[in-house]
Length: 355
Image 1 (cartoon, rainbow, N blue to C red):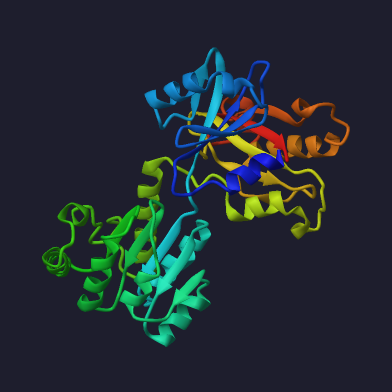
Image 2: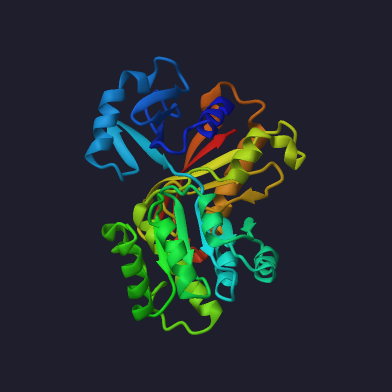
């Protein structure tokens, strides 16, 4: 299985990458990795995915957002891999601090651009992943941007807003938001268009920035901004797949002091009702019971962890790779679930794989 994760780590993040896993039939647990529609890795050479590549891609094309398709009667779970989310904040003032902190809580890489050393230091103390203390134009020239980059413009003045927006509209991005009154924003947009900015891109600018929740304090404004970014992110229905920490733990297990002991990766592959997390959500269960990530918490997650730990304990004695994979069904509806405190309802199927 490590070969699979190495292949995922080596994927070109600029391409459309997708993993697929068979959930039933004789090929249960077989995996494949596709990049731009090409089969680049499979767990069994000449196996299910080689034989049914065209049928699978045809099923995907009918609904590219669907997580579960059926190919010749076999259920196949699809996981679209995005890059790690990057939050680029132009400005290190009071509003940027809660945005930094919430972005880090979401698992984003957070880059802050600020030309004042004192405010740049504030961003560092808030935990920003990277702080560029230089002019905004110089800093933005060092940021390429991609379809998972979220730009937040919260500078201290009209002139800096225009400098940032002029450069950002020419970059790939998932989101551009700018703070300011409607009049101020309209003036900046007009100036950027006069200097060659694409009006179609500027029409997609989120400004006034953030969801309208009546925010007043810097902390409330930060919440509103990040709530809007979450809304935009989830509308795309594309996760980052495997976090950097999770991949580091899988590929370099000695970093946690567990040597080559088994771990179990839990992935939600089907979801019904009001289950708290969507398909594709992942959690890595370590030998000592600690977890990286969460698939929803509560008794549901506890039940999955117990099964995962049992698989870890028995993995050394299991015969054949199929013994290292199983589907775990958790029903959070009905009287039994209510008695256990699973008040959210819904049901999930979780694929457990020893890695």
